[in-house]
Amino acid sequence: MAKRKGWVAPSNSPINSLDDGCLMHIFSFLSPIPDRYNTALVCHRWCFLACHPRLWLRVERPIKGVAEPGVFLNLEAAISAARPGDTILIAAGGNHVACNIQIKKPLCLIGGGELPDETVLTCSRGSDSALEFLSTCKIANLTIRAELGCCLLHRSGRLTIEGCVLQCEENPLDYLSFPIVSTATAYPSLKKGQQDEHGLTVARTRIEGARRLSRPTGLWRCSTCAPSTRAPPSSSGLKLA
Image (cartoon, rainbow, N blue to C red; front, side):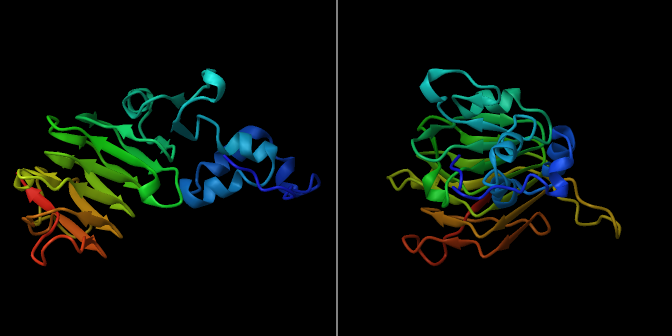
């Protein structure tokens, strides 16, 4: 993570009188991107604490081949090691493979680039989906590409997709490809004040290559979710299996 030269927190600043554990606890309340990321640019101490494995795990190639705590070579290993509520930062650059990865605990997956196109998850042909969600999760700032099948398979829990790109490869079998397939059950008759355990929210997300949409009432919301200009006007991005 790059550090901004010349920006150093004053040693006599009151916040620097707190111990590392207290500062790390404060950082845990910040949104990973951009707030927690920006705290790492303040000074060496804040960079160490803001990037500590207790706050988030990272998927990237370790520098000089030396293993680092909280750093994993692939997304599946990071998800397996993560604890409920953890945030996983996926490094920009390269092409990360994601095939039929099941997520059974609440997690947040975030791309490490400035734009979603800089962090790509690829689901190869022959896989049902890149990611399968069986718990409440959030993904942000990622490009997810599926050759066949679907980018995201939503089984249960509340899934939030924000600032992503979902790509279905164009080929003779593109009618089998869907950006999102949801089999979660909604309960529109909940009493006032109760929150549905299942739901899908899509915001500021671009959909490319999608052909169909089946939208169940009360299950999902879409905010500024736009199909690519390559797709026909009737195209959209969710299939209910």
